[in-house]
Amino acid sequence: MAIQRMDNVGIVVEDLDAAVAFFVELGMELEGRAEVEGLVADRCTGLDGVHCDIAMVRTPDGHSRLELARYRSPAATSAGPRDRPHNILGTHRVMFAVDDIEDTVARLRPHGAELLGGIARYEDSYLLCYVRGPEGIIVGLAEQLG
Image (cartoon, rainbow, N blue to C red; front, side, top):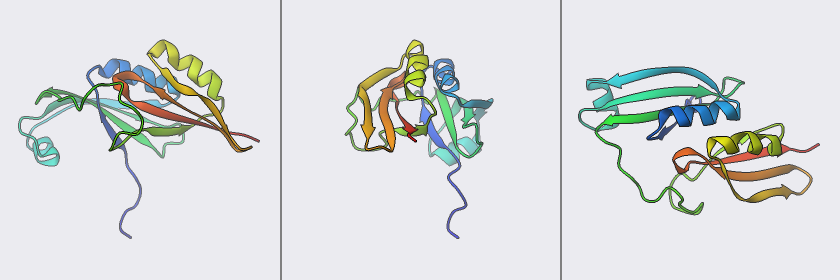
């Protein structure tokens, strides 16, 4: 077998505490925080002088994780404005299944979530939406109907 599973998705942020608070409010669990630096970090990332703080959050089922990283050095670089449109090349969103999409959006708003468009109904199967969270991260939400 080529792979066993997807272990995590990494997201670089400036405000680690705000990003952790956003994803915890979404329903993820903080697995832990750590400071990472040294030869292994340099070799793994292909950067020199890596020193960063990371937080790992996981979904309640324990199968999916996000690694949120704030680089102390080398300084993080911007890939452009944080309000980029959804159709930009590259990773554009992380999608989560939720039990109540309207409640989830309402709980995320105080954490900076901005609804992109609105909540859409896909046939009789799903309610779907995208929100822009901290650092411009686009998060998809899907509520299965029926």
